[in-house]
Length: 81
Image (cartoon, rainbow, N blue to C red; front, side, top):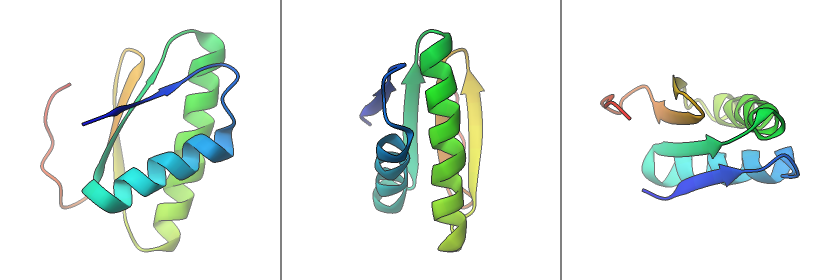
């Protein structure tokens, strides 16, 4: 799985679109952010992406591990990062 890397300068809408697109394709997306600004942008993007997916009826879960997030749909088995 490819990791979506987020920086402090990443546009949240673009990152959210990437997250939602990956989630639609493979039901999982891994997001990585290092640093306070990057974590802020990543969290905002995750919230936006969850909104996009909720509109389509795709419920998602978020698992946090340090500065990485794994998003999965409800039907996807959970695994450790």
